[in-house]
Image (cartoon, rainbow, N blue to C red; front, side, top):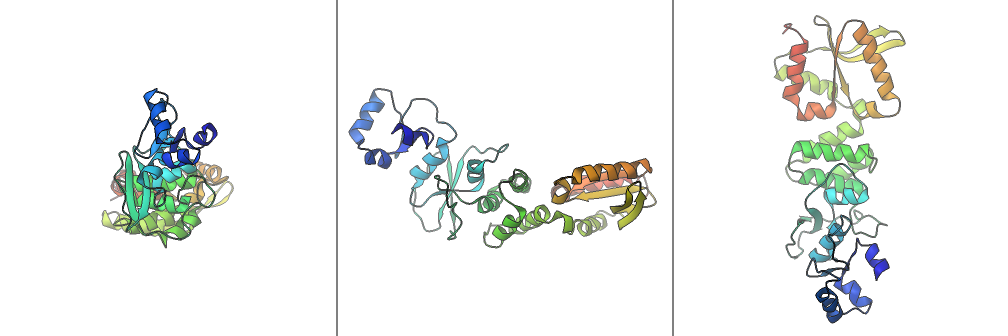
Length: 294
């Protein structure tokens, strides 16, 4: 029993305990003796301390219904190893027509279940990281949080950008799906994204003259390709996709920016997510950089 409990964060379902020969009366005796606790109707903690983080998803699955519930969204990503992002509630998904109880500390989502979306090997019933990331973005409280969880999942190598692209074709999220697909394209294919064209459209919306795009300059290490530049103001804007964070790209970008700055241009850098989430702030900084040229 102790070995099995260790695999589940120190808790077990009543059905698992029954399979070990520990019936309702035996559980009641352990609880009365203050050795065990009952955190849920169907769940037993074989200790009296606070529930560890590893126990929370198991409690959610057992209390909602182990035959229908799957840990999903950001909770599934955390189980896969996501760090730096936390949620007060555990997210689980069930089939749309499932009947299940409300459980404190658990957010239950009714979804259209896909045959291969469950992780094939993990003991914990949870969705694959790509499915979980797209659903987490759809269930996020804001566009900013949606973009953050997608970017973190890729940056921490829980999922690839290509897997996210594939998942967006089958996983539907209400209301935010176009935004999620755009952010995923930015993350997955930043080097070939339409970020520069989008930037020019933003300039038009904010009454800023369109810059020249893909300007070629001569630097100390050969040709330097600038994303956008306003010649009259000597202002350069570099738009970074996901490729700018890979391998030696950061080193190359820094050397290129230094060369342009030493040639007395001003360089502003924005990542694609800034264009999606902070358009007004981006354009305000560009306007300042143009120094009265607009």
